[in-house]
Amino acid sequence: MATTRSDAALVDDAGRLNAGLSADDSDALARAYDFAAALYSDRLLGTGEPAFEHAVGLARIAVELRLDADARAAGLLFAAPAYLPEAEERLGAALGPVVAKLVTGIGKLNQLRVVTRTAAPGKESGAQAEALSKMLLAMVEDIRVVLLRLASRTQTLRWLARAPEAERRPLAR
Image 1 (cartoon, one colour):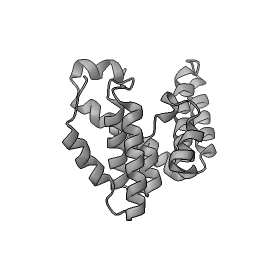
Image 2 (image 1 turned 30 degrees about the horizontal axis):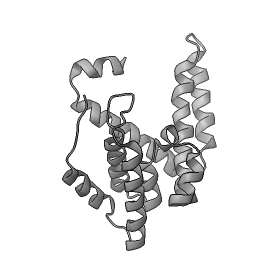
Image 3 (image 1 turned 60 degrees about the vertical axis):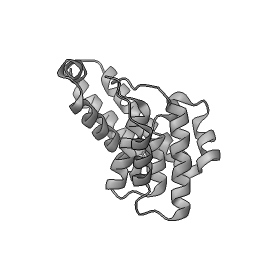
Image 4 (image 1 turned 120 degrees about the vertical axis):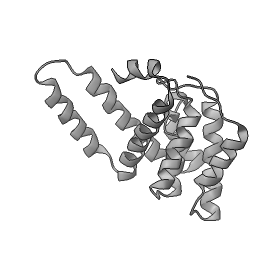
């Protein structure tokens, strides 16, 4: 289900992302928004959701959680490591080291999904997956990373709720 949104809707989203921020923070967030728009362009996530649409939805949830500008920017760039060589260095140079570290942290939490899915099936796999989850969460240096990861999952669920059942069923399995 490839959905497209008008440029006007995306500009409106960009304005809402600035809620409660200073002018300097709004400028920094605008740079992150433009960076994400160029980076994701027409890319789709594994669920079929457009990457940029997911990023904006994630950042809007960060606004609802009253997270700061760095967290909102990191939300916009959640998938940058998948598409950008030397992502942490390049994001650090373009948007600052805090945003780069948050994005890297989100990537580390994303590894949790891969590790728990590849755990051997059987009686001990649930305990092993739980232990791995706890270990990776303990490695998170900033609680905003966990909040952003949860916001990303929420955005995915919101997007899937609008998808036809035929598309949701395989993903649910």
